[in-house]
View 1 (cartoon, rainbow, N blue to C red):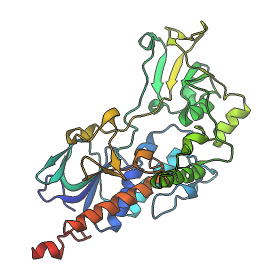
View 2: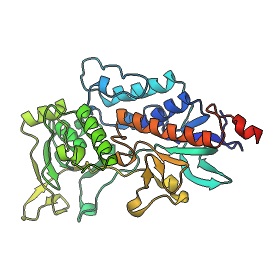
View 3: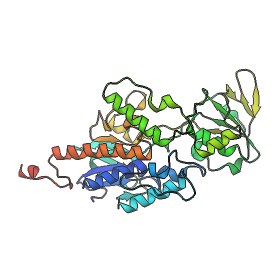
View 4: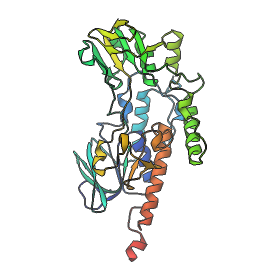
Length: 373
C-alpha cells in the first residue's frame, strides 16, 4: 500500500473507519484495489464506542451484519448493546486485515494534477477516488431557543450522555421525538423525574416492527423511486420510534407521555406558550446530527442546504468522490450496519468500473491496454 505524501496515487482513500468505512474497505479488498482507510478515532469501534451505556440496536445481531461476517449474538440480549457493536467492528477490521490508519484527522480534500489530495494531521494521501464515510457523530445539532444562555442548570446533547446515575433525584427535561430521546427517556426516568417534550406528537412503530422491517421498507422505497412508482413515504410513513425492550418497559411504567415543545428556557426551567412553567436541573437535547462534510469544502460539491447531490453514491459535481453511510440520500438505510454494506458495494463497483475504463487492472496496477499505449 502506498503511504502518505507519496506521489503515486492510491486507487482509493476512505475517510472514516466506522461501519461505513469498514464495509467499503471489505469490498475494496475484494476488488484487489490499493487503498487506505483514515480514521479520526483513537481506537476501533466507530461512533459506537461513544454511545450511552443502555443503547440497544433496533434489530437482533443476526440481522445487523457488515458484509462477509455475521455479527455474533450478545449473550443474554436479543438486541445488541453499543459496546457489543463496537467490539464487533474492532474484530471485523482485524478479520479482514483492513489497512486502517488512526488517529488521522482529515482537514480537507482538494484536486491536484488529475488526483484528489487528502490532507490530514498525519500526512497527505493522493487518490484516484475518495470515499467519504465520516457519518454524523462529530456534528451534533442543538436548535436555538430563547433563554438557553440564561438557564442555570446543565445542558447536554446525546453525544455527552452516558448513563442515568448522574441524574439520580434530579428533574430532567428531555427534548426530541426520535429513538435517542425515547431510549434516553426510558433510562433517565428510572432514577430521576423526567419531562419529555417534542415538536409534534411522537409516532411509535408497532411493537413487532424492528430494524429488519425498516430496512426492507427503505429498500422497497428506493426501488420504487427508480421505477417511477409513486412514493408511499417509506419508513417515515410507519413512525419514528422503534419499540425496543427498554422503550416497551418505559411504556408499561407510563413514561412515554410527551408534552408540546416549550416556548423558552428560563433561569430555573422552561416556560410554555400557555403560561405554565416547570423547574429543571438538566436538559438533554436529543435533537440529532448533521453530516460531517467540512473536509469536502475545497471541492465545491455541497449544494443548497449543504447536501451533496449524488447519483447512486457518486457526487454529481466531482465523480471521483463517493458518499457512503449518510442516510437514504446515499443509499437505502445506508446509515445502518446492514445498509452501509449495500451502499459500499455499489460505490466500490462504480470505482472499479471507472478504473477499468482508465486502463487500470483490478489489482491496482496499470492494465495492459494502458501499457501498450
